Length: 442
View 1 (cartoon, rainbow, N blue to C red):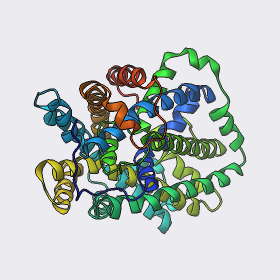
View 2 (view 1 turned 60 degrees about the horizontal axis):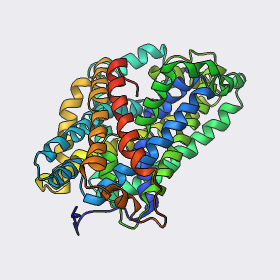
View 3 (view 1 turned 90 degrees about the vertical axis):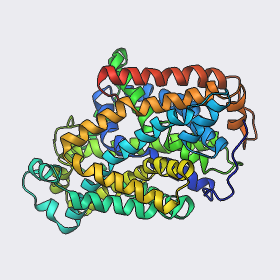
View 4 (view 1 turned 135 degrees about the horizontal axis):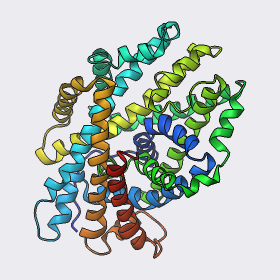
């Protein structure tokens, strides 16, 4: 395959910048509210066994594949799919490539609503409003009602696109270098504070003591697969796009290893903060997603210096959400730039308009929940599946290996083709089918 060379195409300036941007795309709400809940409910440390297995398998197949695919063709999924199909003398690849582009835009529109909620809660923590609120269920209901947080929603979009208009190296890379370290530092501070709470030990037991019988339950493996898949940001979109901005001498295997490692660290760190804090104040640990906006604020209100720690928490989760949001929006922005030849500012402006125009009508918790379920169940895994098929099956034999090995000092082992062509593509198909059957596993 002839590689595309675009002299004016923006790039990540450093390998570190690329890695933290990919970590930022992976570390999101699923790490903070879903991972702790699932780990505790599905066997504690026993759940971590299948989860770690799937992180390794998907990280060293799908993640490196999407990174290398984007770097090889220097374009996002629409262009990448078009080039792969073109190698077979066929057309239509670009149209197929719009599936992950639309999926990425769809999930970003829903995600931006939640970013607005984080901004509202951060502001309320700073002013003391959150600490003085009465019933937290009522408070969240007002924020997450129809048109309940339009101003905060629009502010979240404005902040995100204001960063993105400066491009990859000048915007996304710079902000990820700040936001991701701050996320980890703030959560480490919270970890230290929570460890001192009376009753926190019960939370550690719930989270970490293995209940081995859960490994016999097929749902444990199903949800561990889903958690690993979505946590690693596999969608046939954002990682391909970020990879297209990666320099040719970077080792994508090393990059993927670091992304998988720090994403897992973020999930574990969140679990070691959230679950013990909930146990310390004897709040319902099975709250699931409402944990972020109802349960934890109630915990902070009872905690000494709770206002301060509430601010730290919502700054950290806001940074995690914004870094993920930038990755999601970059896919349609890149598609407009590469396929329609729009300027960066024009592409950002068009996507911003679409996000605001659609997002404002799904601001309620019920509406955005349905929206996110539909996109994450039917489009996100399909995008990842199509990307895997394109790179590992449609591209010429040996192409995937050569692109992944570019920038490496050591050749890959014989495991590469079986793990990528059969295991990864097979697991992605399983994620797609099980997601539909279970009503979502991510």
